[in-house]
Amino acid sequence: MTALGVQAQKLLAQRRPRRSFSDPSIRALIILCASLAVVLSSLSICDGHWLLADDRLFGLWHFCTTSNQAELHCLRDLRQAHVPGLASGMAVARSVATLAVVVAIFGLELLMVSQVSEDPRSWHRWAVGSALFLLAFILSFGGLLSFLTLLRNQVTLMGLTRTFWSEFTASFLFFLSAVSGLHVNSISRTDSVTHPWGLPAEF
View 1 (cartoon, rainbow, N blue to C red):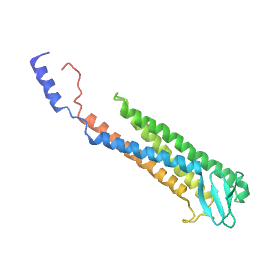
View 2 (view 1 turned 30 degrees about the vertical axis):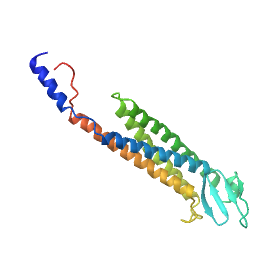
View 3 (view 1 turned 30 degrees about the horizontal axis):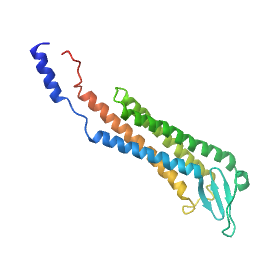
View 4 (view 1 turned 90 degrees about the vertical axis):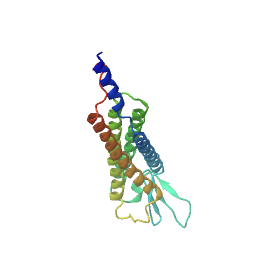
């Protein structure tokens, strides 16, 4: 290697940008937000009781009735609620909501693996994980919308339970994690293209 090549390598080493401290911190916050969304959605779907209307409690898995503040009497046969299309429609709603959690778990795994490994494909894993969270948001929101549409005549703002709002919050966090992840990844890719200091050993 010539003296000019040695000097050029030293200059590039000095100008090579270091990874900003804020980048891994932001990615860690996105992973934390995504993890919280998965937990909230899982708990909400497992409980499944999303709407209280008078003395009836509507859920993804059960239909419950109560009288005189007595113990709940729950039935798995949603046709007993006498709401047209509730049984078949609720099967679709809970399937879509459950699939959203499964997709989000795979997305979360890709986000975490992309931070552990430092190979050149890490940005691709992060992008795919963020895209999966966007898909999870669409599925989760679809489940919420299906539930509200099926019970549109019984829905009141005060009747929606905490588990419903937990699912609503999880759906919003899915969207926030997806958009933030894709945006952070696009900035990182732009910086790597704009500052291509990682040149081969021979100048």
